[in-house]
Image 1 (cartoon, helix red, strand yellow):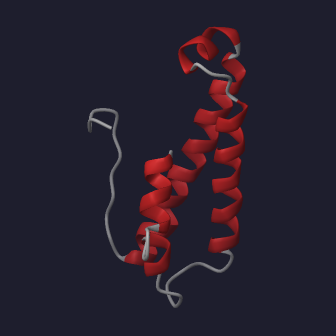
Image 2 (spheres, helix red, strand yellow):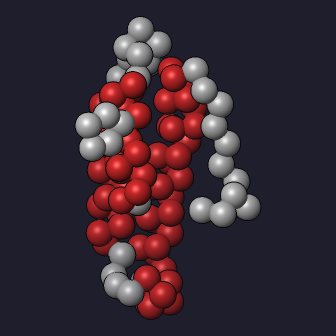
Image 3 (cartoon, rainbow, N blue to C red):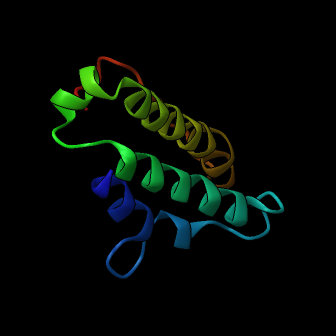
Length: 95
């Protein structure tokens, strides 16, 4: 998730800085911040190592996946629409 944060925030300029205010849905930034924090909190709750957490604390892993999925939906819909780009995620893209 650290890589995604770097893309969103950038060292000097990130995707969030490029959001045109006239095309960004009202409340987007607030909602997006809530979703980002939910991802951070969910990942922080997953005990290390992840390989062990899958069997010892599967609910935390599922919660992290769910939080990340909600953030992904926000990126794929509101953010890409405001930026005027098309973005596709799939299970076979090598990420």
